[in-house]
Length: 366
Ligand SMILES: Nc1ncnc2c1ncn2[C@@H]1O[C@H](COP(=O)(O)OP(=O)(O)O)[C@@H](O)[C@H]1O
Ligand SMILES: [Mg+2]
Image (cartoon, rainbow, N blue to C red):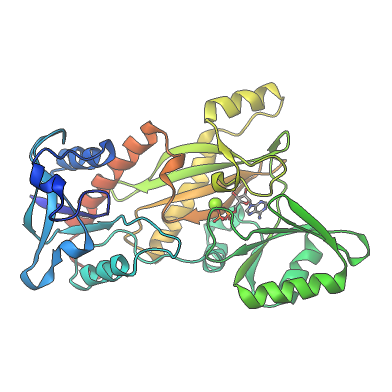
């Protein structure tokens, strides 16, 4: 049987009480990976970094002997998996170094590994603007100097500055051109109007501290004072192709420049938001069109990262209902998934494991 290794921290460590009691059953999400794995003819192994014994070519892992994963869980030694999915949580300092190192060690052995290292926001802007995705991208570039920012601000009334490795809406600024060289600088809900000299001073200080992408600011559709955008989850499956796993509208906090849940935004459903849009006389485009744009990005990025499995893409609509892609998350938060999206993701993940394993050890890891 093909072995699918999932490296995670959710299942108990070796030697824990759970292992000794013999009655341990993991949460539903992990039971789902197990039972969907079975449907694809995979044995799913759940283990941690410290469970890998390369010298003897084995891992100490949790497996279940029941089809639905409701029982029969035990920890034991297994040969190394044929394919690996690293699913460590992201802490405040990013991924655990050990998890990243372990992922590389598997790749060096020629074992296919889901999701190799990914690109930062500025690299994505550069790569994608030279591809079919260009028509869905706001104009933008890496902000290497203040003149990159002022240059874009001359061409557009509003620009966004985003830390190249930022997430959850942190550190994002909206800059709006005002008369007499003044600029309105907004972060979260706070806004300041500054003169030209002060603006240049602020920008050079920021660019010295952190790397940014500067991007044309779009006038996104709004519901009252709440900015709207959409998280689209795209995932590869057993056929190696990209599929949509669902779409989730987000509403920013009142007056906020970002829609992220961690920055005070909230989530809603496509059905509710599109009913509101129809009533307000400006219907949304079909969900399919938003998903299609996200799928194009998945296909393009696969050229650069052949084992890329999924992305959470922030798709936006401007006031003319034009579609834009704003953000490409390699580790999208599960908080935005509905239970049915999670089910779809689980089935696609195990299918994609099967796909990668069947293509075998190759030079596909990067
Ligand atoms: N160019 C832009 N124009 C208008 N709004 C934007 C733009 N870029 C981002 N935003 C808003 O800011 C939010 C956060 O930006 P994003 O690129 O997704 O960064 P993060 O990785 O922090 O989520 C987006 O969901 C969107 O609401
Ligand atoms: Mg985002």
